[in-house]
Length: 77
Image: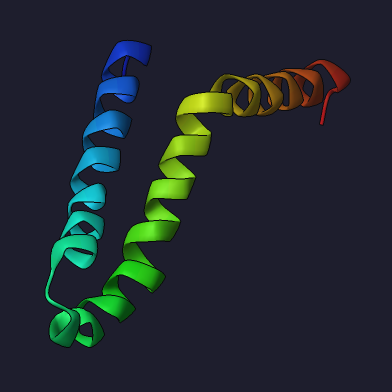
């Protein structure tokens, strides 16, 4: 498995990389906004939201899945 520190580092890098198109969207000339809009709306923003939530509350999600699998093994399922 991958260590927690490596997971955090990967999450931060992905979060920052997908924030770059938002900077291009904000600072691009008004005429070029239609070129950036679909990528920013449907790819960059969802990935940024997902990685941000995972960095913020990912420990609860990992705990929920690890306890669920441990509980199922203890129950004999």
